[in-house]
Image 1 (cartoon, rainbow, N blue to C red):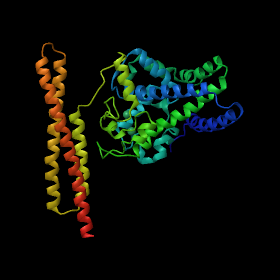
Image 2: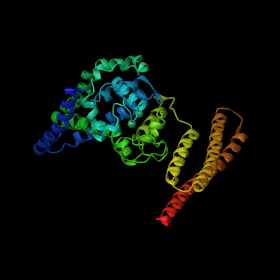
Image 3: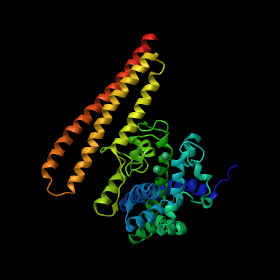
Image 4: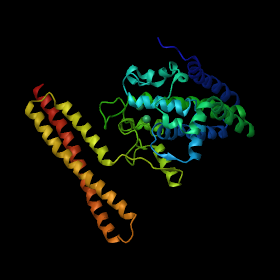
Length: 379
Ligand SMILES: [Zn+2]
Ligand SMILES: [Zn+2]
């Protein structure tokens, strides 16, 4: 029988109730102070993204490197969300990735939506974690110091700062309510959605075996963490929304930090590997759908799928080759002529890749249609 972690349990249950009751009473008696609301909005974004860009993609996954100033800000503002220290958070999160959907995954969604959302927190004793899977973080003195002084930092940054700013502006309780309590509750549940909703809602384009799913809705609610199937398949990539148009403010923040010299070595999985995973997953899905058809029909689909997906793979490999060549030429001098030629080839390669991809999509739709057609005919 698991023991309840009473401190966490009371905190997680009392804060939303407190936020609702106090919020309702405060708004009734004092109304809404636009300055408190503005502070809430800014502080909510800053602290939440210290979790997504800091705790998650930097500390837990080492998807990029950041200057000490950035790391310090992540650790201070991350603590303000009351989600434990970066060390503890990262240790749990690495276990989640290593043991996804199995025992050993602290927020295993197979135990239910609510378990993954917050139930697991009520039963986890963070003091007993030994942090064996975070040796790299244990040699980072800032991370260790944040873990050691976690509670005073969390209280000071989570409640003390909003209260102090509010006091300076003549509305300490309004700022504490909005920038402290309501922000903490909202921050908790948006983060928790990554463990519950991102493992329940959406598609699985990269790894059908994982419960993790890609969903624009979850991405909007979680600062870009909703492309969770991609993330579980390629956890070292600094992006979760890998396509340019994917809603992933965390990836934009990291790229912005790189632009001003505060982040470096952003890790990107090569497009060839991403596409290979995508094709494999598509193929597995189609084969699963046609498996009741005749042996000859399945063999025909397999043959056709292998042919078209090989075409996509060739096109994406050529594209990668040319992109790398262009990058190499950019660092050299006096190669303008060659560079121009590579650019022209690149344009052609892009078009060929797009065509091959479209052909693959059409082929997939055709397989499914043919199978559904056959199903109707025999029904
Ligand atoms: Zn996950
Ligand atoms: Zn992760």
